[in-house]
Amino acid sequence: MLKKVLVGGGGLGMISVGGVYLLKVNFHKNMIDKDVTYKYSPIPSRSEMVNRLKSNQYDILIIGGGATGAGLALDCATRGIKCALIDRNDFSSGTSSKSTKLLHGGIRYLENAVKKLDISELYFVWEALGERAHAMKIAPFMSRPVPILMPIYKLWQVPYFAYNIKIYDLLADLVCYFDKGVPNSMYIQKQNTLDQFPLLHQDELKGSLVYYDGQHNDTRMNLNLVLTSAIDDYVPGQVGATVCNHMEVISFIMDENNQKIIGVRALDKMNNKEIEIYAKVIINATGPQGDIIRKMADENSRPIIQVSVGCHFILPKWYSSKNNGMIIPKTSDGRVLFLLPWENSTIVGTTDEQRPLVDHPKIDPKDTEFLATELSKYINVSPEEIKNDIKAAWCGFRPLVYDSKKQKKNNNNENSDEITTHEISRSHEIIEDDNGLISILGGKWTIYRKMAQDTIDYVISKHSDKIQNKNECRTKFLMLIGSHDENGNLNQEDLTFGCSKLGKKLVDKYSEIDYETANYLVSNYGYLSEKVCEIANELKLFNKLDQSKPYIEAEIVYASRYEFANTISDVIGRRFRLGFIDTNVANQVIHKVANLMKDELNWSKDQMNKNIEEAKSYIDSLSLQQ
Image 1 (spheres, one colour):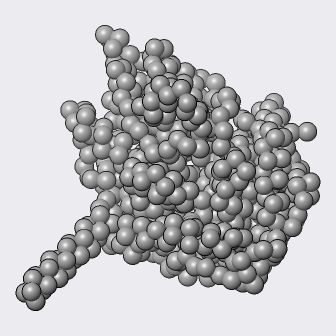
Image 2 (image 1 turned 30 degrees about the vertical axis):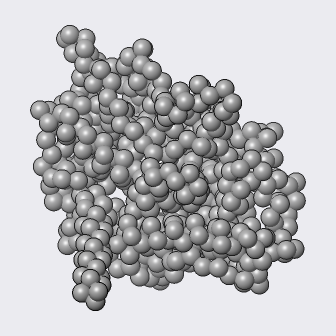
Image 3 (image 1 turned 45 degrees about the vertical axis):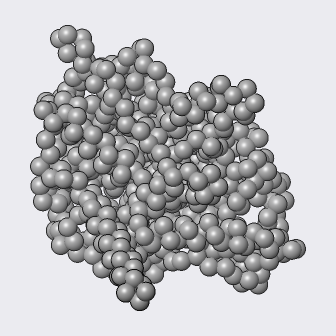
């Protein structure tokens, strides 16, 4: 008997050791070498990029400069694949700029997976938690853990929600080989809850569960992915991608048999000229526009995207004064609602419903009313007060891949309810049409890297006769520009959020800036904040655009020279986030931004006026409907 116990115990021990080993192997798969040397080199200007597009044959052309497209460009570049990336507007000008700013596994997806014993949904959360750790480490100056409180008003909720949150923690520990990058969840009593979130209703409050997810500046992260991909030999063997914004695909070029796509005709919207771009493989990474691009290539293509709109609005910092977020696990219509600190303000969102696809969706009054009403049920502020405090608001379209099997089953069941968009999985799918166009559809911000890896793996597997990679995928934990100094060195203390040594260094060196501005610059540019300050010092551009905000004039020059900013909206909406934070202030600084960009980009008076009007229209799309 003892022998059997010993043998059984030894067997379990071997299985445990084997399991831990497999976790380690999985965690280190596709990881960049720890001792890799990062090297900065100049990134070509936009005009140079356009000339490259006209004169080169590419291995891969990527249409769409959002998170997925940027991830694809970096994956290609680091594998040694010659690629180009174009976007009809600015990089991250669509869905990728209008997220909830979370890097997360999906706590609500986990609840659904556990309830329904859905293994595929559970795997999606597992995968997303692994990618959360990646996304938080590659740009430590702009990504950080954020504590999120779940207020508890009924005692039975404690074990129910704690069970799901502890599974969330455990999955993150396992997939990240116990290096998940955020603290563990905890339960705190009523008084501690109120100390952390003073606005909560106190009556019948029992306490709260606190868990952690990641948070980032989505458009800055997107931009840094693009810029990193464009550098030759940034890591050994990297072939810098050709990247170009404001380059719109207007038609596809077919081969001599009119069977396969071999290129695109694109309109350079900055000078209104058409060019032709040729590539062996073309990838459609346009998110919600995915079916539109597929139909442009083949008018008979079957739509497979279900778009869902998510709306958010911005409140003053006062609503999240202790830098804690809050999640309402179930609103009156069964969705979740977040209140999160971000960029010295507070985000509230999101909704999840169908709406026709348009370029610049505005938040509907009913969505504003819904969010304000649901939030007021938990905090000591009325819906009217909340609505009066709104500084900006936006809507973004999610590209959901509809499950045709589930749809067919639902249609055959007369008693079934219509499936709503918040029930559709956020997983991704790769499809290849008969004409050779490859589309990566679905997904979410957090898993952009895995979506890119899966897509390029597919291309290499299916088109090995045309595409060969010099390196395997190695994008996991690859540090983005700004994460290290010009010599490739990183000191974590230099970039610590809120008290970075680099921020102190900037204040000591430049008397014109204060700690608020220095910390803001470091959290948006990392080590490249030194370059922004050098421009400010050289051109005397330390002045703030508005005294209530940390943005300085030098950022506009820096964005125009080094970050492909071509319009006022590029700067106000995506190089710094003023349009998303306070539309009144954004409108007030338009002319200041225009005058600085005019000198950098040699605008005529007509070009300047056109840009001003376009910027006003863009900011209006980020405002409440009157």
